[in-house]
Length: 236
Ligand SMILES: *Cc1c(COP(=O)(O)O)cnc(C)c1O
Image 1 (tube, protein in one colour):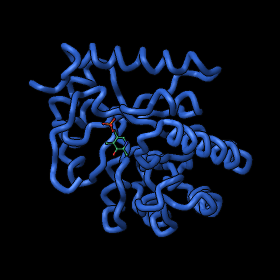
Image 2 (cartoon, helix red, strand yellow):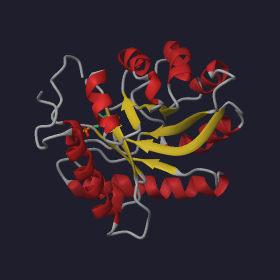
Image 3 (cartoon, helix red, strand yellow):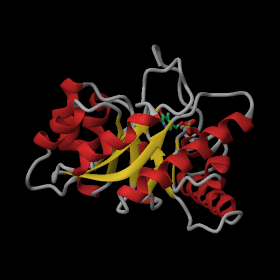
């Protein structure tokens, strides 16, 4: 299986990644960030192997791709995060299947997710996705819209505002990415004044999680550094 190019087993990949996170964390005064294992394109067997190694939280980009995996692994009680763009017509499915939606970027999603969150599940954890530096990408709200969106979420008992998420534009220059991470930290600290309950700043991927952690991330989303390189797929 070509699943872990650099490691002999999922357990070895997980432990190496966790110790690398802790190493980056040791250059700050903050606790170790949470690891979200990004499992897009990985099948249920690969995810089960990572779960057996001790990883509980997994991130998926597409509702449709995630549902059969969530179903197949139901007995394991894993924590599923939606980290891809959410279309309004998938809000129903997302609100039922995921524990977290990290990509709320417009007001329209808020009442939809609240309405569809089943009453027998705990409130849905949500992050506001911010377009911090990428004028080309349409994903994420503008930084100046965060407060309004946060107030709308906080007014919904079936949603639980946990913080912010960002995917900075891929810049060849790491300093540029650092600047984006730093701007997110500032935004997060500002939002915490009105919403002291927020506890999650989700940013940093395989290529830049060390810098993200140094700039204040407390959740990093890692795919290829953990599972190995992703197979190419069309349209993404
Ligand atoms: C794919 C993806 C990741 C993980 O990317 P890697 O470079 O494989 O670590 C993180 N966040 C989002 C939103 C993604 O789509």
